[in-house]
Length: 291
Image 1 (cartoon, rainbow, N blue to C red):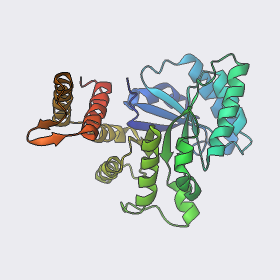
Image 2 (image 1 turned 60 degrees about the vertical axis):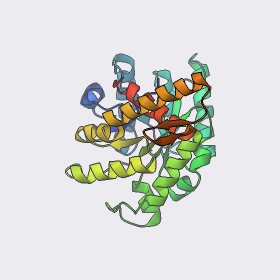
Image 3 (image 1 turned 180 degrees about the vertical axis):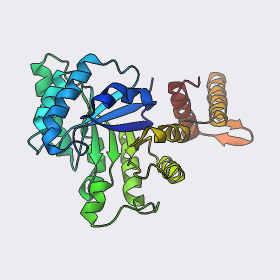
Image 4 (image 1 turned 90 degrees about the vertical axis):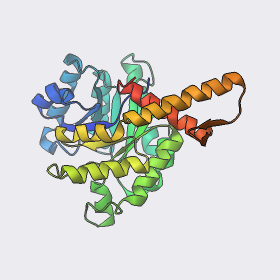
C-alpha cells in the first residue's frame, strides 16, 4: 500500500519534548531537524538526543525523517553515521543541487549500513531542493537512485540565492514548483512543497496548499501542528472523487472481461489516462482509510 506523505511536520531535534510527542500531532511524517532548527553549539547534543529517541521511542504509523546537516559541514558525516547506527530509515538531504549529492550520500549510507550489518538500501533519501541550481537539476536528483523516495522544495535559501524576499504571491515560485512537481512525477516519487511561515494565516496556508496540489505536489511541509489538518483536507480525495473512481475501475474491469475496447460512463468516453488517475485516487483513499 502507498505510504501517506501528505504532511511533513518539522520539529527541532534539540527538543526532548518534541522527540517524545511530535508523532502524536497527526502528521503523516515528522522531520526531526538537525540543521537550521539547531544552533551550532547544540548540534552534537541534539544528534545524541535524537539517536536515543530512535532507540527508545515507538513512533507507530508516523514515518520519521531526519534533516541532517549538509555533508560539506563538520557535522554531516557524523550525522549519517550515528543515524544509520541507531536505526533511521529516512534522511532528508539539505541543499541538494545535483545527482552527485545523492550519490555521495548513498555511498556513505551503504558504507555505514555494511559496518552496522544493516541490509544495504534500508535508508531512504529525500532530496531537498533549495537553490536555483537544484531546481534546474531536479530531474537528475529525482532519478539519482533507488533510495530517493521524494524531493522537496525549500524557499528560504532559494530566495536568498536570487536576492529576493519570500512573499505570499502564488506566482512567485510558479516555475520552480511546477518543475519540481513534474520531475518527481516523471521519476515516480513523492514531491513535498515548501513551508508556509505565517502560522496565523490559515486561509493563506490553505490557498498555498491548494495551489501546490494543483501543480502536482503530493504533500506539503508544516511548521506547526495546526497546519496538518488543512494539508490532509486538501490532499485527501473527497467522497465524490472516490465514488467516481470506483465506478470507473469497476466499469473498466467489466469492459476488459467482455472484450469491450471503448468505455462510456455518464456519456463520456473513458480512456487509459483517466483509468490510471482513478487508480491513483483509490490508492490514496485506501491509504487514508476511506476504503
